[in-house]
Amino acid sequence: MRALRPLLLALGLAAAAAHGAGAQGGDTAPAEQAVGGLSQNRVSITAGFDGSEIFVFGAVRREAPVPQDAGPLDVVITVEGPTLPVTVRRKERVLGIWVNTDSVRIDEAPSFYAIASTGPLDQILSETARLRHRIGFDKAVRTVGARSQVEDPQSFLDAVVRIRLRNGLYNRQDDTVNLREETLFSTEVQLPANLVEGEYSARMYLVRDRQVQHLTQQVITVRKDGLERLIYTTAQERPLLYGLLSLAVALAAGWAASEVFRFLRR
Amino acid sequence: MQIYLPIAEVSVNAFLLLGLGGMVGVLSGMFGVGGGFLMTPLLFFIGIPPAVAVATEANQIVASSFSGVLAHLRRRTVDLKMGGVLLVGGLAGSAAGVRIFALLREMGQVELLVTLSYVLFLGIIGGLMFFESLRAIRRSSKPGARPAPRRHHSWVHGLPLKMRFRQSQLYISAIPVLLIGAMVGVLAAIMGVGGGFIMVPAMIYILGMPTKVVVGTSLFQIIFVTGFTTLMHATQNYTVDAVLALLLLLGGVIGAQIGARIGVRLKAEQLRILLALMVLGVCGKLAFDLVVQPTELYSLGPGGGH
Image (cartoon, rainbow over all chains, first blue to last red; front, top):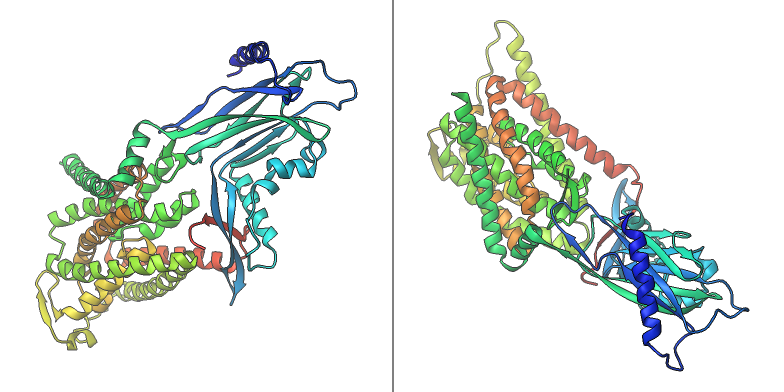
């Protein structure tokens, strides 16, 4: 991985240069565009899967030099897993024991969410820009419409973020994006072992004056593979066969152990 | 060595699972309990989703019980007729239990009611067994004291539909046997256990079966009830994890063989008092967790219905 990095950076740069030469810009094209890449577009979950590390890198393509009066360039990189609804329950003390009482169904919460940036998020991006692009835990985890029956729905949203931060599913690190001479940028994103399958999107935002100037997106496919895939699809598509096979394995193992021990005792 | 479980969708240490399986297997062989009442909470602790833990545990109990019952069959300590009658009640109870489980899950209260039923049943049974075996040990340690005569007439003996159970040396009504089977079946489905920890004392104290056939007969019946439960979980909830089950049962079947041999060497009273202490220990821990404020008051679940 470490040895690979300079090569990947070089490739990114070459790609950026090639793009720049090829596309003779339309009028509306922004002055600066991000061109990004990933160390891998596929994550295979196999028996030995214990998390993965993805290297996200890219370069800034410019038609003209940077204007003198523009603020410094910042880069924000997010990797977001499939968004699924989630039910949050809260315990309260009832008759001396702790019982689930209130619950809130949260319509949108990414199953995985990592944010890396060149600086503190709320300083380099305005509130409206974060809202518009849904950058940050508070913007990504939300309920649509106000039909919640509890007094403090915000504490339920906070709980999702807190629990997933603890499980390594959410991750926010300011100052972990490397930006070289306002041109080359890169960061590493840790994927934990408890991933769900699906399409993950890696987004790279170029930020100036607290506004998003340009955004590019790459897709990472997370999929079970090999034996893991076979077991999973059998369980989903042929549940009866799968159940009978599980029973057969259990009975065979029980019988084998009994025979082995009988043999050992002789 | 970390291994990724395809259905549970988490990565855990393979040796940890083998060790847990082995430990619970020893208990299974010694006491004729499936060990699910210990294993299911242990699986929650290491981060296996509860639905997967309950379903997979049923499959693992099939293996360790089968291994144990083979050893008992050879020693002729299984009352097949009694097991068959218990089983009829057990399957009916298990089918009812799965419906109750689904209902509670919708209400988000399944965790609480599972814990409460654990505390209630483990507390009552553990307490009863503990004091009874303590009394038995005191009696037998007094020199010259006669062993207490078995009570020959209780309410069980007044019911109709009598059957002869030759191996247990009993001539009793089939009604209490069917009821015990059904009750254990319901608990098996709701609590994700084989139900041996309830069946064993029920057979000793309610039916009056001799201790030496109790363990084998209990294991015999558990195989079928948990096998039925495994199939239902596999076809309805898709929550049986084959890799997890395999690791647990590898340890489990070996443990069960060792346990069956330790069990033969111990006296019946010692066996019962040990089981009673263990049952009370698990009960105490679960009750403690209910009363003490949890560090995280919130929990996440899949966001299915509204």
